[in-house]
Length: 279
Image 1 (tube, rainbow, N blue to C red):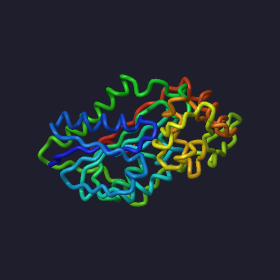
Image 2 (cartoon, rainbow, N blue to C red):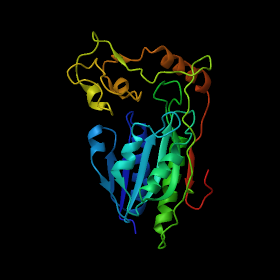
Image 3 (spheres, rainbow, N blue to C red):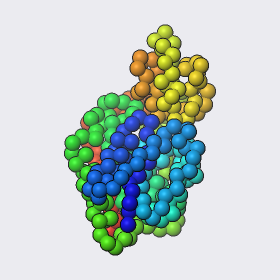
Image 4 (cartoon, rainbow, N blue to C red):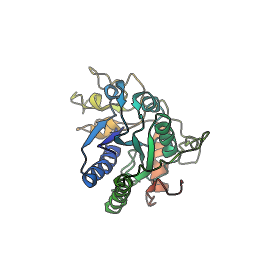
């Protein structure tokens, strides 16, 4: 019998955390169980182990990067979590394009780490690259659908008999990584792109340093990004003076492509529970 609900989320921009914790809290309220939230975003949070048991339900949430679990964070999911028979749900958020192989990849990770996966859900959020893509998502209709997913998980756990998990077959592979495109349809190569800082606008508050999930922004010189940048936009979205931005031509062309092709496209959520057909 489940005695505690957990929400574990990697969420540099905040949308994934909101969705993941919303699902966990809804289930907790439905079953009258305590909920504990783990923010898996900053480097320090990914330096410890999270060990669960058969009396736990873990809602694990990640944003979609190029149609997959962020590749620089994927090893942390594998290293830090131990299921020991805990129930789980794999949740991802995506910016109105496609969630690709993310749910499959996260499901596989959880399954391999000893979790019994009861459901998967992909939720549309505003794209972190542009406020014109997925604007206002998740909206009221999205939240109603996610509430229904949470209620379905709660119903599975309310019975006396332990529900059968959703098992992916051995050898299952997630879809390949998505190749970002420029406006002309050719590959956009911005892997090494990093944000720049308007030092006349920057007041040195250190907020960007504090929110970088890779710990890549120098503490004494916020204009220096010495480590890996995963393009999560956390430093840009959290900068109170709007002093950070990208200038890389391929990156900006990719953003314009997204705005032209997805601005008026209404993508859908995708929710699946144990006992239903796997997508």
